[in-house]
Length: 175
Image 1 (tube, helix red, strand yellow):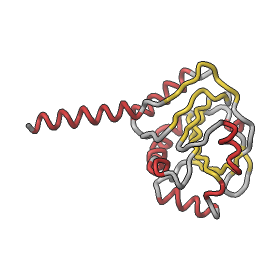
Image 2 (tube, helix red, strand yellow):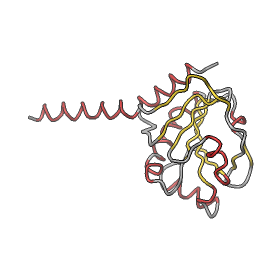
Image 3 (cartoon, helix red, strand yellow):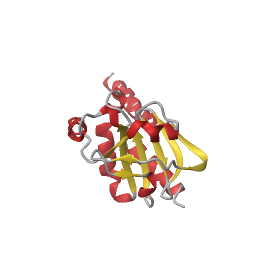
Image 4 (cartoon, helix red, strand yellow):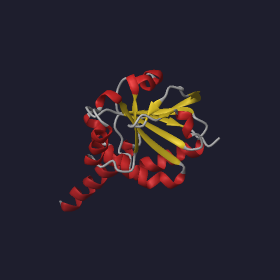
């Protein structure tokens, strides 16, 4: 009976890991990313093109989104696993979510996102330019600043299957 239980538990564990890598929508053709600016919490402007040379994952999220909050510590683990391999992750939340930059920093730390870079999207301009109206929503951008795919919904980012899948996508889009 115990062996059967352990077998079922193992199957569920591996099935959950495999499912966590699903939901990636890769495009047949890459697209130019919008040129709208987004900002550090202290107001310094950036554009996605500023990150050329890295495989970039932009995670659109909100502090009012429970699945977004649940994946913060997983994103932190993902960043730790991939940071030295040409993968960069940034969080992008609506500016209206935060009264101060310190509030945003404290919130992210409280939920385990110590290593992830975070920015704000003023008036949700970049999200609107991408046509994103739900969160969490991740945009995959190759090293040439071309959008190659998206992931809608929460992801177990630090799961080894997900990390491997992202590396495969990065290698296939290494242009």
